[in-house]
Image 1 (cartoon, rainbow, N blue to C red):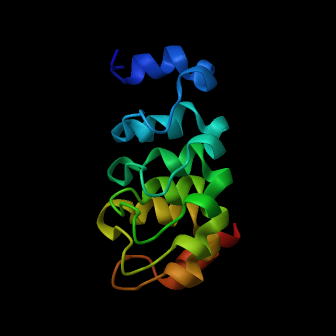
Image 2: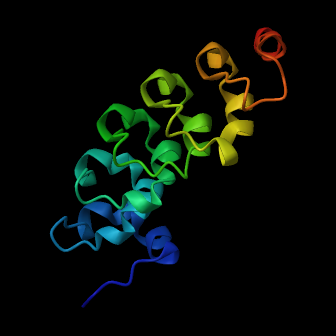
Length: 140
């Protein structure tokens, strides 16, 4: 019987991961839900080539402890920069790329969450505040 994976199914079955997960038969389109509901089993399901990178937003939040295993700038969907700025601040120097960063959507969260790295990300063409103003905020 083919399983219809959805949020309700994962909510009901996440604790039974070892009973149902089979990498060969799993529909990898739903791998983003593995990140959300089965992060404690990350090492059992993670597959860089099969993971659904289109819907990557849950990896930073639920699997940040495994950042070094899953991070791949060439595969990451840069439309989801906010989760990186919120959940992967400690790995900022590994993931931040000003040429790929979604400035339009995520610069506010960058300013809020990553002030400790203002000297790395500040670009006067992208912010109304001066570098010194942002630097002072980072010290407070």
